[in-house]
Length: 289
Image (cartoon, rainbow, N blue to C red; front, side):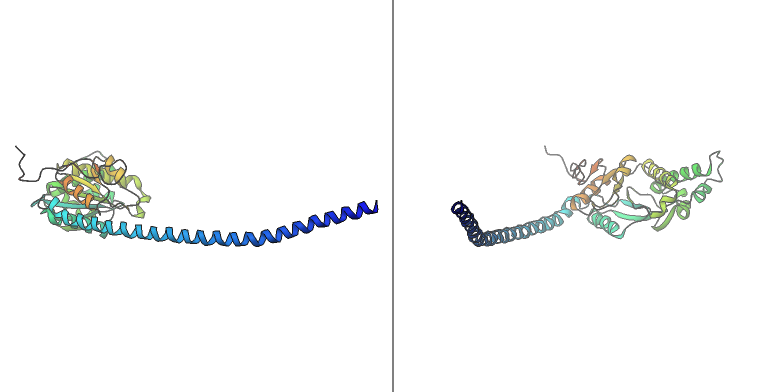
């Protein structure tokens, strides 16, 4: 029995010794393997990063070439397409400088002239607008009179008639130019925070004023930049306007110009928009025999 016990203990000791040796050897070997794998992975990642950076540089260079090409061909696409046309730029709420510059830059080669830059006051002064019609007999309440005055002012803006000039102070927060007839209107929208105090009055003002613009018979185009937040395209669309959602891009500028010539639709980079309108025949062009 003693021999068997000693033999058993010795066997177990030998097993544990072998296991310990295996662990030590495996740990040393595994560390070497791990270091090798780490080096290989690091080298692979560095190579992938270098290739990605080269690809980015190539794409940026390609985009620069595309941008230069677009800028070069833009005057040929729109040059003198709106010769002598008088246009108004109307902002609902406020007019960001970058958006104003985008519009003016887009129009520069066309031969058109912006004769009015107007900013519609929001929230509106409903009482002052309603008072414009106070001399006319009407059973309508003050807010309804204000909506009617806004509509008539929109039509008067296009036609260059008297009511718009009378409405300048109560309707607009700023104005430059002359209240003379125009042959196209560009509308932008940037509502101030205070609109939330009376959203119904503001919505009524915008809708009725745009209805009046459309009733004037000239093309009316709602435009914004691709980074507009929130977007007003759905609002413009609900009012029946032709829209452009990428006015800072060459495609958007082309779209706006051709919309002012009569193209209708929803243009831009949005999923449900056409990039540009069908190219309209330039003034003086003749059909091929």
